[in-house]
Image (spheres, one colour):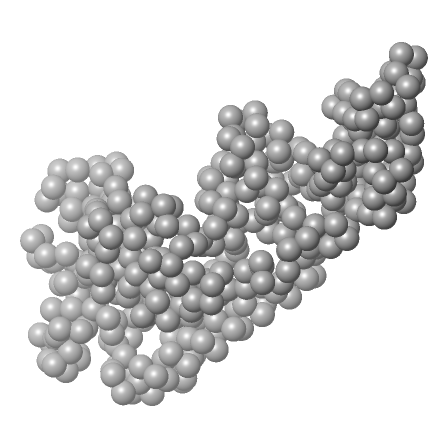
Length: 396
């Protein structure tokens, strides 16, 4: 998703008493090598009375800059750190990132990048207006994305659905985080078995397959029309149209198989099989088959699950306990709020104290969203990657 942009003019019109600052043409030429570029910016604004002196302690949180000037600030900070610390490559990138996290200005409002080269300073009296404006443009952005998704719904894939689940504190969130950087993941696939077989080929554990199953069932509940029904033959492993496959019951072992016509013809010569058409099969048909042929509940449950995952039987017909309460409807935490949480918690995990780039700090819901938690500041905290993964959906 490409982030939308918000013009300084639109912000100034909506938020009263904003102070707009313009840098001199040669401002970047004689910067103090011992100060971060961002600190130099704030010092210059105070020294030249571009903002009131009582803003000194809070100027960092009041300052918003446009995309163009922000790129110039980052480039200048990169040059300064490269010369001062004699570093380059990934080490330099990390140093610039931490310099920005600690002292850099904000670059977006309501999930929208600020365009141009404006520097805007927001007074306390206008913070409420800024929050209202931020909520408004967030809703506009969300509604635009929803409309876009609906417009192209027929082409949406499981992968596209799964990616936004990355912040969820459950197994579906874990799966999303695992595949986000996996360049080989079958992103265009609309078949459960294809994705499952890929994960197995990558050494996925049973818990990962269960996570996939849980995510796939939720996806099926939300978008049943996006799944193309196919059956997978128990004998050869190939996938076939449901019109050329059937459910077969071994009359001696009472085991159930799904076979395509070719495999069925071959096996019939030495196995006594009872056949049931797979086309138009529903939950009641399976139950009747179980009751009349002494099929075990385990066999029946396994067959039903496969037919649901393959999109042949609707998930709501036979998967109990999956209600609306199991689905997640949550707004993402904005980058500005994430930063505010990290800054409040001093950029360290509140459970183990880990800090620095190796800690992979994240923003966690103390009371999980799945249990009614909100995204208010009082319900958010900074955790390292390990502590957050260990927590999952528990309330501590």
